[in-house]
Image 1 (cartoon, rainbow, N blue to C red):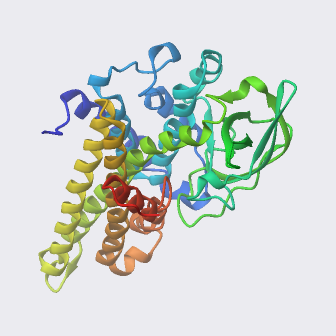
Image 2 (image 1 turned 45 degrees about the horizontal axis):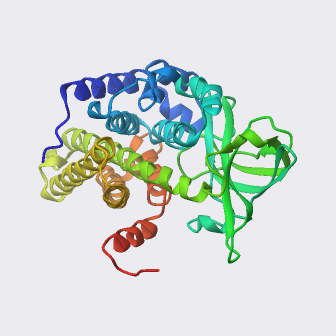
Length: 393
């Protein structure tokens, strides 16, 4: 089976690469230092159609048929953006996978018509409120509550580490909340759309993060936040299952982001090892350096194939069990490889790799979160083991 890209996909990749190199690369170091979220670049990404790659034409999307590989196209865009900057890459990944996708997949016609056109156009962003202070990998331990009183949901609780949740163009967050209790005492988890500006809903001060300085990330609080009953997203009691499905796609997208980071490490290290002179020649002639870059190239090819395979399975409508297994494998391998790749790159650059004026330092800081977001490495190993039939807890 071949995972070679079509001519159309290669042309699309080139267009996104040109955009990233022209619109992002010259400014990204300063944005990173300033923790600046570049709204104008998000709008330009929208103009390029990046937020609409998986959406139908009726909402302003590309309207790509499955055989045209819409999800593969999204992964290519994330990879190319991530090759220049991880924060911009995650802004697209979260904007589509965690912002648009829940509404596109589970929303009713009215919700889609109201929210999707501006999200798909990149004019607005949406957040995905799952993680809580006491419910990280155990998302079923959600404490946020939503009580239906007359024709309104009253939401109380808190979320944390939520991407695209407090920017000036954030229009809403979808949040998981307890809406009742099932037989046997287990919580009923549903998903509620909470628009920005809703009284009682607050995006708290942005986090001071190790990496992803350009990405918009906030804790959220809800204190008697009233929203209409029609803001229930999908079926009542299906919120947990819905978000688990959303995370499967997100894991492949994170794998694409990690692949872009590894590509950047290969590019930077190859160039530097040819330019840096020591002991009468370039350091790239030393096996100690050249072999490490060769290892990076192997990681890159393996990561890309695992990512493209999982994306092709999504586009091709593979059985859900098989896709979930492939998504976890891709996410686990690529994220851990990206962390290793940035460590190797920093070592090859030596003292310069420890200086913020060189992009490897930024990539080193940005890499670690890839092993955590969209399900930690430990969660991926658990899911892979379960896929093999092992009764792991």
